[in-house]
Length: 135
Ligand SMILES: Cc1cc2nc3c(=O)[nH]c(=O)nc-3n(C[C@H](O)[C@H](O)[C@H](O)COP(=O)(O)O)c2cc1C
Image (cartoon, rainbow, N blue to C red; front, side, top):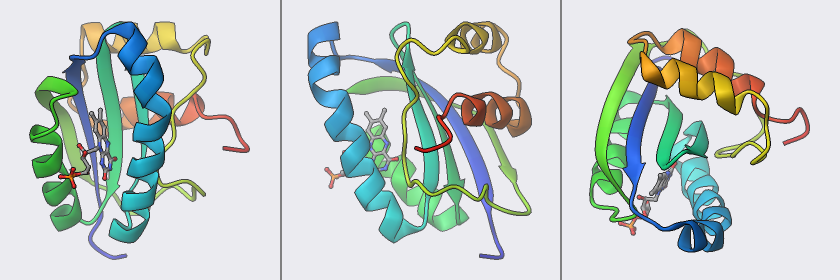
């Protein structure tokens, strides 16, 4: 794919803890299924009441997904914090994945979020590091 972008957004989760636990696995599975056909890859993290999502793909595919996301009532106040052209996609085998709930780097994510960088690189580095190798 020649024209590639990476987008990172933060949104506020509207689900309570029980609903989140019940829905997160399904949400990631449906996202992975849909992203595969849209040739999008990404990482989704729920941390401290917020969603952090990194998405990589063609600009038009990302724009379309963002429209769907804006209508999804499981979150609100979507804020795109970084969006840039990238030369290549990460060679990942997943279309959407979420890191383990007890991952130690979640603390670093909170730190990053307290002063969110507008470049995709720090987000990309941290979010990819949170994914187990055999995801
Ligand atoms: C935090 C969050 C992340 C999501 N990530 C994706 C995603 O990466 N890809 C995707 O297709 N849908 C994702 N969804 C689901 C979409 O918002 C939407 O439900 C889905 O695309 C189906 O759209 P439709 O119900 O309008 O057909 C996500 C939803 C939430 C709340």
